[in-house]
Image 1 (cartoon, rainbow, N blue to C red):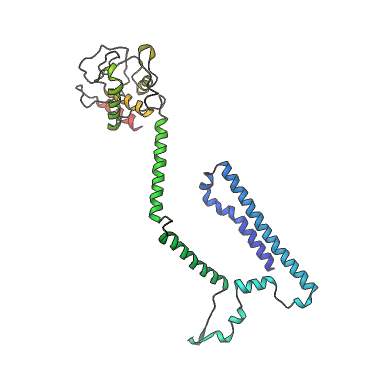
Image 2 (image 1 turned 90 degrees about the vertical axis):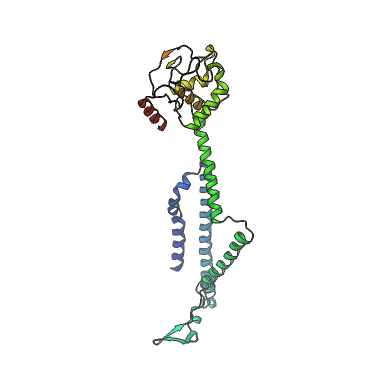
Length: 311
């Protein structure tokens, strides 16, 4: 009966592992197919090892029963399991319960305390904790190889920052004419102004009044006055008009910044304004009010700009 209970307990432990693993489902979901296949193979190998151990225990019990049957003189000797249990699990209970184990000086209300012994398995666990404590202390404190809790936390923060930066770079690299939005932040407009001065001022004038290229301060546009239109022109250029493409020289984020800065020139008064070209653009929601504009600022357009930026 005890053998059956032992085998049943081992099987229960084996089949309870997948149930316990459900708590870490998020971790398993992060594994790719190769890692999951390797994990399954390892699980199968462990299962086979456990089954072989159970089979070995059964065979040992069977062989022991055969020897006892063929040699009656061995019937009075304890089985290997009883010897194992007595040595490593329970100890010699009968010996420990002798009357000599009663502590005469520990008597309370007529009840004498028994000098209970520590079971062998608990002695091994206690000794193991001492060994682990010594190794742990030496590894983390004496040798300094292990990371403290604070160091692990700082390392996790560093890894999270690197991952966040990578995600941000991926997001910025994915900006194109289909998803670009107006960025009216000071940092973006400052970057855009620098790029405009270095690459665009030669044709459009430093104040956007126009020269070889068209005037960027009025509401007339040759290819559309929306942020997506401006982004597309800067990115791909207009070869037949002499406008070179900048997609190989500027990153998507830089093209977004310079496009946002170009729209911020709307309503300003350049020193020399070139005559309007193209068609009147009446969208208005993409216009960024300039700080030095001499024109009155339309509050409706400003509100629309804030909404566009927040989206």
